[in-house]
Amino acid sequence: MSLSLNNKYISADAKHYIELLQVLVSRTLKVRYRGSFLGVYWSLLNPLIMAGLYTAVFGATFAKYYDDSIINYVLAVLTGLIVINFFSAATTQALSSVVGNGALLNKIRLPVSVFPVSMIMANIFQFLMGAFPLLAIVVIVKSHSLINVVAILLPFIALVLFCVGVSFFVSALYVFFRDLPYFYELVVFMLWITSPVFYPAAIVPQSVKPFLSINPLSPIIESLRQITLSGNLPDPMLIASALLSGMLFAGFGWLYFHRSRSQFMDLL
Image (cartoon, rainbow, N blue to C red):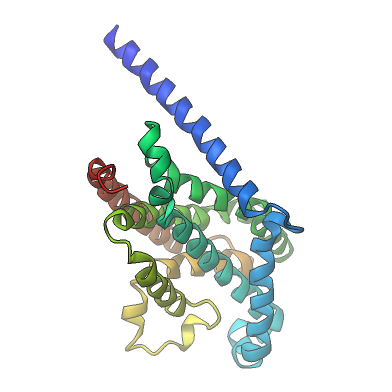
């Protein structure tokens, strides 16, 4: 009987959490794109414009690493930008989510973790509405395989897990250290410059590669790029590496958030 009651309470809590998440995601998207002409498609327009600029500057030099194809270079840059932009937007927005809702948390008892998670979910919605259809079209043209279209979601899941871990960590840390956004901008820039976004990984000197290999975004970008550009089946080692890294970061972030949240209310 007690087990049945516990399951009922868990089910009710999960339902309440999901309903709250839906409200917060809807509110975030409405506020973000109120009065906007393109709405969620701004998240796709930015990497498209940046890919065009990188191609104009570096296309002639780096196209040889992509079968001497400017189109392939554009697509390679686009996939890298989609990953780094998703990470930057989701985690930066999540960073201030707990502190930003401090007044609400002081009035109503809510699950604190729902705030950083809602920021991740809002960006997942943007990806599914904007970048995913474009990547799916490219994959179908390149591979003629629906399996590869579905496989796009595997490195994306790894990206989401990584973002969840980082978001839990930085949103909790910001409660204690209010200068964190300034430092985090530098962290995001370092991750961007050490990720093979606008340059091919092949040009990185051997002496530097060990330092770049610790960047968790690199296997995600390389895996997504391999699925999108090669037309071959996904490389299981790349995907496994990306997923493992994402799960480790998600676990670490949740553990730090869970251990810190008892101190939040005194500082909000």
